[in-house]
Amino acid sequence: AQTVTQSQPEMSVQEAETVTLSCTYDTSESDYYLFWYKQPPSRQMILVIRQEAYKQQNATENRFSVNFQKAAKSFSLKISDSQLGDAAMYFCAYRSGGGSEKLVFGKGTKLTVNP
Amino acid sequence: GEEVAQTPKHLVRGEGQKAKLYCAPIKGHSYVFWYQQVLKNEFKFLISFQNENVFDETGMPKERFSAKCLPNSPCSLEIQATKLEDSAVYFCASSLGRDSLNQPQHFGDGTRLSIL
Image 1 (cartoon, rainbow over the protein chains, first blue to last red):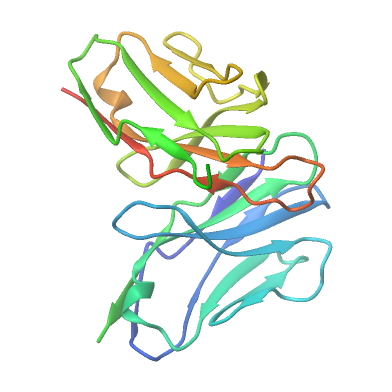
Image 2 (cartoon, rainbow over the protein chains, first blue to last red):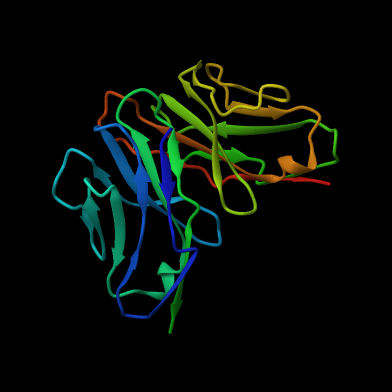
């Protein structure tokens, strides 16, 4: 079974600075998808960014980018120019490319943004 | 609709009572997923549907949990004889389908279930 590990329970960053959240995963599959979701205190689950494993190019969405290292099974999220509204729980998630469509989540990283 | 709609937002039940949660997926989405998020923030997959058919039920506690997605009705997750450990936020998510590569799951706002 696939597992997702987020080794940083909590992180903090100064407003306007850059922060990187770590995520590693374990799988024997070659075809899969990776996601970062943001969960603010309102508990909404907001998709931040996604990456297809077959793409070598790292995904970017405005201030959010990933460092996808397939051989190392690593999928870190970089948030540039951090804003107060970025404060939330961030969850890394894995989805198989075949078979079950379910998401396997890490335990989350709580990000605090200091003014 | 344009959003996954979950009702109620908060449900309080006494231990041993039944709880029923509802989810209306985004119109046109053929996959529905149920996840349980416990107080430690951990997500657990429960069950998924492809239209009205069970697609993956590997996460469902079989004894007390059941779920349905019937045509022209919201999907439902029902817990019989609730226990304190069932207290959690239950999220429903929907997605377009497997033919659409890399389609993300869109989540509802969740139902907070409190068992007293």
